[in-house]
Length: 151
Length: 165
Image 1 (cartoon, rainbow over the protein chains, first blue to last red):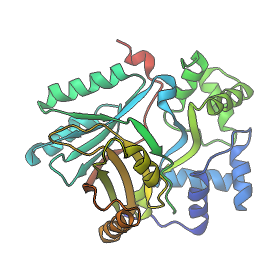
Image 2 (tube, each protein chain N blue to C red):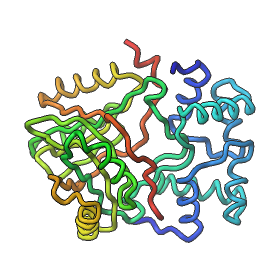
Image 3 (cartoon, one colour):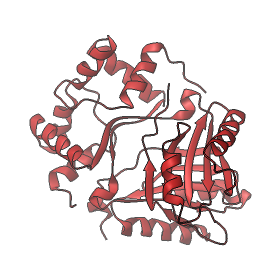
């Protein structure tokens, strides 16, 4: 389902992908640039979150700056076991997202944690509980981030 | 760098996002026993140190009508992957670009990019055009469209203590 966004919603989504003020009244400041009031800004962000348009409202981290670690993991899951394995994987709070993709490696998920040791423990448990191998592909270098999508 | 206790507490308190309150940093501070000014200073310092990349929103592309989400993977010779990664990272079609290790024999690709679009046809065409334009059409590549999204939430950091062995 595509949520109907009006022009102000779109402006909020586009602007806030670029940043959010760090000051005492940040909603008022961000709202001012869009020509709306603070209360309307808060109400609209609340609705965008509830509707699932925003997956996150807050800080994005460089986890490797504080010893955190994240990795992309692939698995080849037999079709008849797909839902069962997805449930095992998704139950870990360290799993940030998980997609089925069209390939023999058909399950792709990101594991993020405060340390490599925790990531390793999650991967070991996934393998033990599913009996399937995981392909661990941590990033070696980042060329571009900032996943910004025009609303 | 090691996080201070205050930084760690703030990151944990922010796991579910910034409070939707007219004074969100004051509300955040109340959860962790810090004053508003202290929270602001701490967040500014984390941004300066690069711990926080940015504050803002992450959208769910599917909900915005971007139904097609392609992971495009490339097998680029190691000697060239830095240059090609910079090239693709700057391409307007590409929203993320990472070098990752190959896992032969099953997985031989070392450069991962994401391309989002309204539908598969337009995304596939954009990827073709991108490869041609950047002179990369001769490198092996695969396009893995997403079939289902099972989970999408932010990475949750700040769990250090409960995660400790």
